[in-house]
Length: 105
Image 1 (cartoon, rainbow, N blue to C red):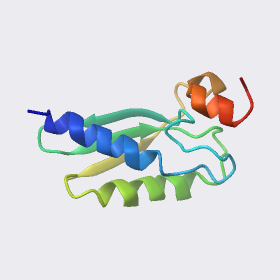
Image 2: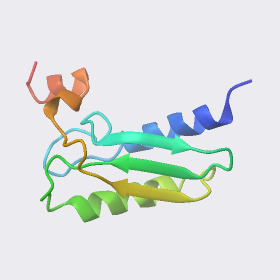
Image 3: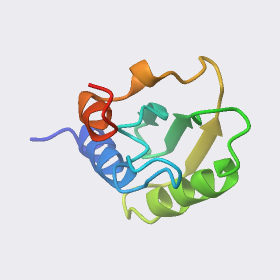
Image 4: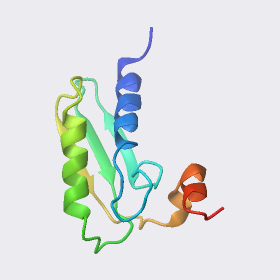
């Protein structure tokens, strides 16, 4: 039998791959903006994320979009989205696919 928490984490990651940074044509998951996805036994979710720069003008909109789309997953109970800048984002946090998409490889 599949682990329901692991299944929910996978579903959350899939939804996050559908959210794009408006300034970069890569989704926020592959861009490396998602630091943590934590799901507890009660299906309460905490997402720790960052922006490519602390002064990102789209920070509020991206956090709101993450909140709305993850909260729409029926299995999610409570949701907390934490924005952090520690450690600061670097391009090394991107997936290989994201680097290829942006011509960095």
